[in-house]
Image 1 (cartoon, rainbow, N blue to C red):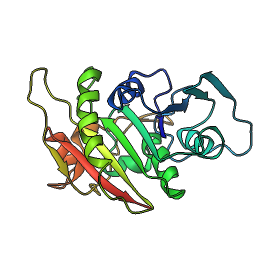
Image 2 (image 1 turned 45 degrees about the vertical axis):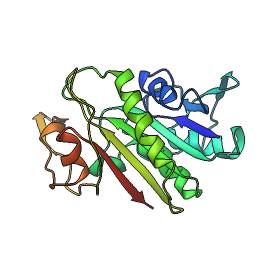
Image 3 (image 1 turned 45 degrees about the horizontal axis):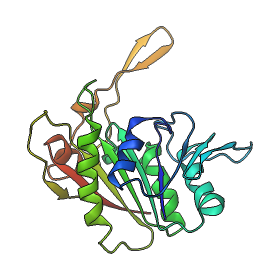
Length: 224
């Protein structure tokens, strides 16, 4: 049984692309609303409403990590893999600690269930070709499903943003970059406005940020 979730919300195009990548297999258990950047937040002091849209789709009034928790304990207890994405934006390097997309599969890893997070780097405000993203994702998933993954480990995939007509990107297995994200603020009175530029972040050669920014698919194996 595959569980599909995300942090962009159940109606985001990325989760439909992920569904296409696995040939409509699995059960969607995804947040009712967007939770981008929520990290590993969980809900413990208030009820979590579950809306069963169909036999294969649940909209959850909770975070991505909540979705994984509910899926593996109540909604679909026979879970073999948790897949999260495809996120509209990269989740590499330091992003993995902030990302709700990655948190969903990290939660699965805590329960010794294998997981794969998939994100698509976006250059500026450019649109993503979700059909192309689905095709790339399907190819990488076919490989990863056949690889041995030790309990407590999970995969993180970052797709590059290429131009229409470019050849399919190379897949590179690499380590996550450890540089911090840009931390820049504009000050107006007592208010601080973040304006760090994602594309200008530092990157170590050969790590996931460098690989993805260079137009290749970055695949990292992360550990609890």
